[in-house]
Image 1 (cartoon, rainbow, N blue to C red):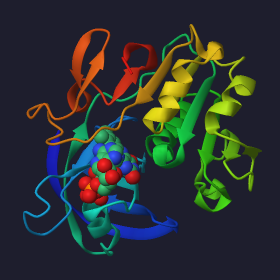
Image 2 (image 1 turned 180 degrees about the vertical axis):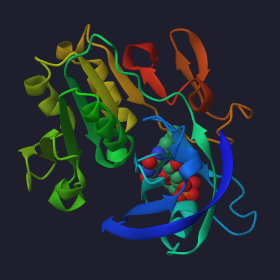
Image 3 (image 1 turned 90 degrees about the vertical axis):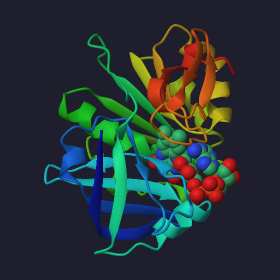
Length: 252
Ligand SMILES: Cc1cc2nc3c(=O)[nH]c(=O)nc-3n(C[C@H](O)[C@H](O)[C@H](O)COP(=O)(O)OP(=O)(O)OC[C@H]3O[C@@H](n4cnc5c(N)ncnc54)[C@H](O)[C@@H]3O)c2cc1C
């Protein structure tokens, strides 16, 4: 884990209220693993005091990382106004990240809304290692779907929208049953309601399913115990023991 001050390369609103921020951060790229996150200082003073956790969205061979974030509150609003040439203070990479089982042959990645953030990095890594990847994305409507042009070109893509404006009508979890039969391992990122629904799906019973749990977080380093979740193995810190857990391990 490193603390670095890095320049902003670009910051664009690619979906309403959702920004794609690119940073020159070779020290982080060198050790980053899909599913890990960075703690970002969101201000020039000590207000807001706490850094905000954001998943590593993608990395490039030339040392850039991208973060994809929804501007939902004070910290991310400040971040959404950063411009090329500004500098950001990052701590990372943090957390455990996803792990692909050696016996897996085909992977399903399930993204609920902004949950696409860590899954693009995972998809790119898995594809370059030779795994076939199906990426299932769900959003409220076509206008809030992550742009298809930014997805890895070799991934098979399926989409759902709650208003039926693109892809299948319904929730992202409704589409899992049709896709999962030939799949050896599932990875997911989205809201807790999505995980709860996945935990009750018969078609996922017995399959390895890893989820990235997003909880309010204080330090990101395992020091403050602000992000403890209940698991079958007892309480676990999302920042230190996660954010990636087996779906069946969490007590909802
Ligand atoms: C490991 C991890 C990775 C994350 N990766 C991403 C990512 O890649 N992209 C992204 O958009 N968001 C991600 N989040 C959520 C992100 O950290 C919060 O949206 C952010 O901290 C909000 O900060 P804020 O100051 O803008 O909002 P605040 O003013 O702090 O809060 C605004 C609203 O956001 C909610 N919120 C705050 N923190 C979180 C949180 N940690 N999780 C869920 N809801 C929260 C609050 O309940 C409130 O409703 C991640 C969270 C974790 C724990």
